Image 1 (cartoon, rainbow, N blue to C red):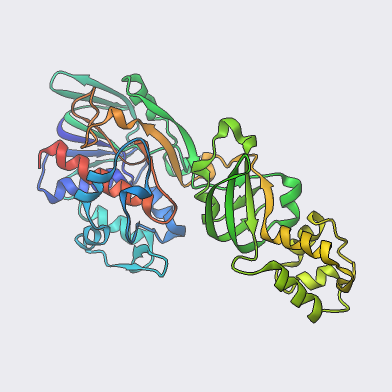
Image 2 (image 1 turned 180 degrees about the horizontal axis):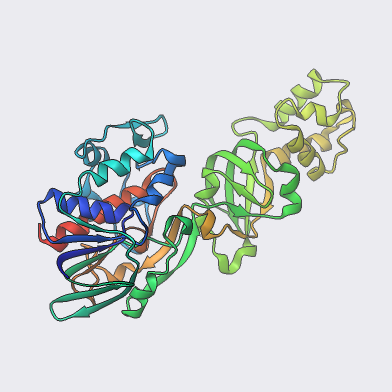
Length: 397
C-alpha cells in the first residue's frame, strides 16, 4: 500500500507527528504501532498524571549532540499546542505542566481525537526499512508499505514493558546511520547494598552532589529515596546522565541531610535540649532513627552513648557526616527502571529538520535522537516538538 507519509511508532513523538499532519489537512498518512493501542508509555508518565512539559524550557536545558534550538523555537508553547487540541493544562509550583484533570489518559485522548484521517495501523511490528526509488519501503510481520517519507518515532530503550525496547534501532544501524550507544537515564543510581539495606524505605529531603573522582559534577535538592540496592528520587534521576558506566568506580554521591543549616549549631542545641538521652535519641530530633544509626556508625560513635558525653571531636565528626554522607555509585539501574534513554542518532547525521542527511525522506524524532533533558517534562516536550517539526517538513507544510 502506498502512502504519502508513514510514521513508525505511536508514542509521544509519533502521535505529535500524526496530529500535526492531520491539523494541516494532509491525506495519505499512516501510523504504525507495534502494540494493540498507541500511547501506552504516555499513560505511565508522571505516575499516571503525565507531566507533559515544563515552564520556561530553553535549549540549554538539553544535552546530546543535536542542536535543539530551532526545533523548540518553531514548536513554541506546549500548553498552547495541547489547548489547541482541547486539553486544558495546569502548572504546579515547581513549573511542571500537567493536564488539568491530572490524568495521563486525557493527554492520550486529546491526541487520538485529533488524528483525523490518519490510518492507525496497530499490532504492526516493523521488521524492515529500506530506500526504494522515490521513497521508502516499510515491512511489518504481515504487510508491506511504501511511502515518499518516513518518520522514525519508535522511541528509545527505556521502559520496555511499555513497548520501547530499542530493538527498532537495528534498522537505523543497518542503514549506516551513526548512533550514540544507548544508556539508561532518569533512573536510580545503584550503590552498595550493605550501606543501603538498613535505610530501605526512607525518604529524606537533602542536597545531593554527584562526585567524579571526588570533584563535584552536579548538585540538586530534593527527596532522596533509599531502596535496598539504589538511591532514587528526581534529584538522583538527574544525576544518571552524568555517570560514565565505563568507569563507574570513579563516581559517588554525597548527601547532605541538613541543607541550609549549620550542623554544629543544630547538634549543640540538640545536645542541650536532650541531655540524659542517648546519641541515637538526640539525632531523632532531626532525622529518621535508621538514618541516625547510619550517621553514628559512619562517625564511629556508639548509638547508646549518652549525648552529653559527645565532645568536640565527636560533634565535629557527626557534623561532617550530616553535611555529606558519601555513597559509592556501583551502576545505573537498567532500562526497565529508566524513564528515558541517552544516545540515539548523532546530531551530525541529521539536518535542522531532523531528516537523515544520508537518507533523504527519512526523519528521526523523540528518544531515537541523541537528545535528553532533566526529569520534569523536558523529555516529553522534546518528543512533541520533534514530532511536529518532522511532520511539517516531511509534508512540505
